[in-house]
Structure formats: structure tokens, C-alpha cells
Length: 186
Image (cartoon, rainbow, N blue to C red; front, side, top):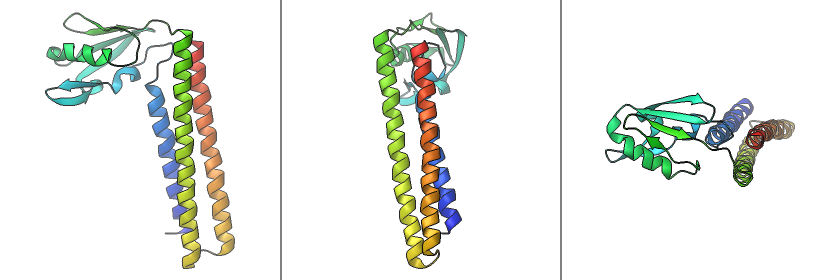
């Protein structure tokens, strides 16, 4: 492994942490309906827990409404049950062909709870980023011990790793701020 390999690996791992955060945040409810709210809900489909997005088409006809049209109408009751178990705060209605979810406006208490959940996700991501930094620094020290980099290069690599960490922590802060703003504006 070389100096550049350590940086390349670090960027990749930091990027994956940010992508994971964005994906997790998509599933948190804001004032508007989003297909991401139901994408990861799992439905018992012939004994297998399957995400809704693989079993149905999801559309957003209005800002506070989600329509789910299963490819196999026989699973509509299972879909409704799975949606009821989530923390969306609403009851799905089905007419035998589609599931309609009308999202009520978020209460102040719900907004606070979701904002707290988002902050917790952001902190978990920061911890993952710092753990990655620690591992990259260990790799850098390993390169120094094996003689692949000089002491000055080792210091420079540690500095670049720290700069990368700061850049990605700023991305976490930006994502957090944006999502909290979406939740509080409604």
C-alpha cells in the first residue's frame, strides 16, 4: 500500500459513510410525502421479507399523499400491515388495488422527535468518520515503520487525512442542517 492508496481508500470510505447518512435520512419524514418513506418497509411476501419498492410502484400525487400499487394485488393486506408497524404516524387505506397513505401534518412533538433522530444519525456518521481516520492513521504509521514513507511524508499524510475528515464532517453538518430545516419548516 502506498501514500496515495491510503488517501484513496480514505476518500472512498468517507464517501460511503456520507452516502449511508443520506440514504438513512431519506426515510425520515418531513412535511412532504416522499417515496423514500416507504422504500425500505419490508413486507412478508411468501415467507420472505421484501422491500415495498420491489413489490409495487410508488407515486406521490399530492404533497401529503403516497399511492402504492402492488404488482401482485394479493399482498395488499400484508403491505397495509407492514405500513401500520412503521412510525409514519398514519393509517393506510386500501381499496383492493392500491394502498393510499395520507400523511397528516407533523405536530411540534413529532418534529422534535425526528430532528433528534436526525442529529443522532449525524453523530453516528461522525463517529464512523473518526474511526476511519484512526484506521488510516494506523496504516500511515505502518507505512512509516516498513520504510515506504519518510517521517515527513507520514506527518503530511496524517495532515491530509485530518483535512479529509474535516471536509466530510462539514458535509455531515450540511446534510444535518438541511434535513432539520425540512422537518421544522413542514
